[in-house]
Length: 203
Image (cartoon, rainbow, N blue to C red):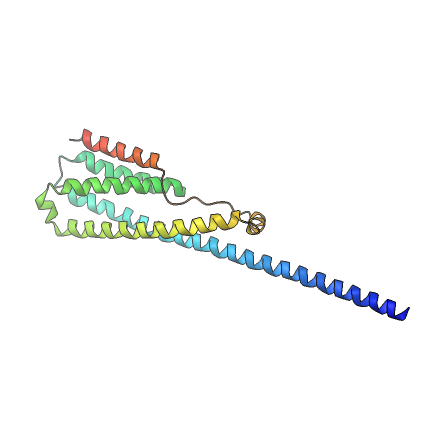
């Protein structure tokens, strides 16, 4: 009888220990998943902040560029207007998707301006214009690099929060899929058509 009671006690202790270890393991794993998702979210935020800083720096350079070239390009008001309007649209964009489209508009307008500048030798010899052109081109390259890095981060994040078991922790944290910093082919065509039309009407 004594042996039977001792055996039942030992079995109960083993069961309790196994249950404790299981719960502790689940909690530990949940904490690991939680911390991993927090890290991904923070990396997304930091990657986007890096892009936003570069976009703002480009915004600051555009008025200087327009001021420099308008004295040389008096017959290219439509081109200058396209750049100014694109900058205004970019500054008023709120969401990442809107900023992606606005970024494409700004880049297209600037390419149009630099292409037209090729027809003005005196402008191309202007030291301030050359500095601004190089500065903006450098910012364009850095934005492109940061865009690729950000989109990779977002893709990893969106994949993780949709996978099991991460999806359960993500639901508890109320994490939602995030948009990438890119535009659709349709949006891209619309921007290109719009600027092509604007530049053509100014000719």
